[in-house]
Length: 181
Ligand code: HEC
Ligand code: HEC
Image (cartoon, rainbow, N blue to C red; front, side, top):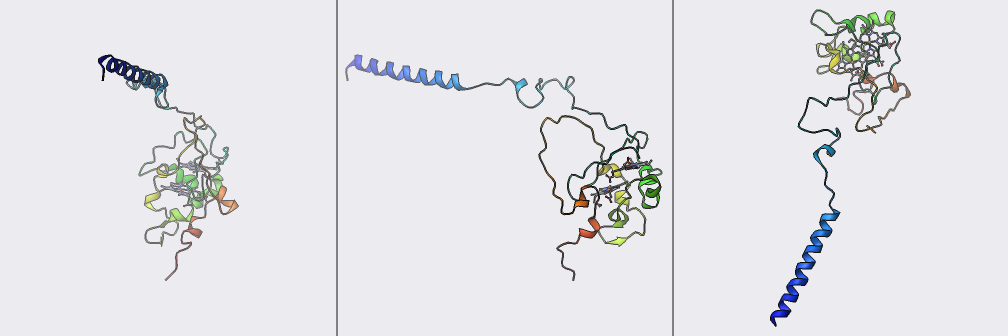
C-alpha cells in the first residue's frame, strides 16, 4: 500500500468517527438534576420543598358527606373534621363515643361493623366489645384532602354489590369460597 493511500484512508476513518460522534451527541438530550423527578427543584435542599398538604374538611360530624369506598370492604375514609378528637388515648377514644353500635343511632354515624367486634384470628364473638386491634381507628381510617396529585391514581375498585359503594359486609363474605369442614 502506498503511503499517501494510507493517509487518505486514515482521514476517511477519522472523519467518519468524528461525524458519528457529532450525530450521537446532537441526538442525546441531557437533563439537569432539577428536571429529573416530579418536584422540579434541587435535590440538595430539603428546606424549600415540602409535600403538598391539602386542607382536610371542616365539616362537623353529622354535616359531612360520606366518601364512596375505594373498593369493596375497604376501610371508609373519615368524611368529617376530627379536630380535637386526637390523640386516641388508652383512657379516651372519642370515635367510639359516636361510632359504637349502641351510640351510633343517636349521632347518625355509621356503626362500627361486626368485624371490629370479634377476634378475627379465633372467630370469637366479643359480644359487643371492640377488639383491641381495632382500638386505634386512625391506623386504618384516614381523613381526606382535596389536592392535585403529582401522579394520578387510575385504580378503579370493583364492587359486586351496589350497597358496597357505601357500606361494608366483610363478615358476610369473609368465608366465601372457603369449604367448611
Ligand atoms: C360527634 C360524633 C362523632 C365522632 C366523635 C366521630 N365521628 Fe365519625 N362520623 C360521625 C357521623 C355522624 C358520620 C357520618 C357522616 C356525617 O354525617 O358527617 C361519621 C362518619 C365517619 C366515617 C365514614 C363512615 C362511612 O360509612 O363512610 C368514618 C370512617 C369515621 N366517621 C371515623 C371516625 C373516627 C376515626 C373518629 C375519631 C377520630 C370519628 N369518626 C369520630 C360521627 C362522629
Ligand atoms: C385494622 C384496621 C382497622 C381499624 C384499626 C379500624 N377499622 Fe374500621 N374498618 C376497617 C375495614 C377494613 C373496614 C371495612 C371492612 C369491614 O367492615 O370490616 C372498616 C369499616 C368500618 C366502618 C364502616 C362500617 C359499615 O357498615 O360500612 C366504620 C364506621 C368503622 N370501620 C369505624 C371504625 C372505628 C370508629 C374504629 C376505631 C374504634 C375503627 N373502625 C378501627 C379497618 C379498621
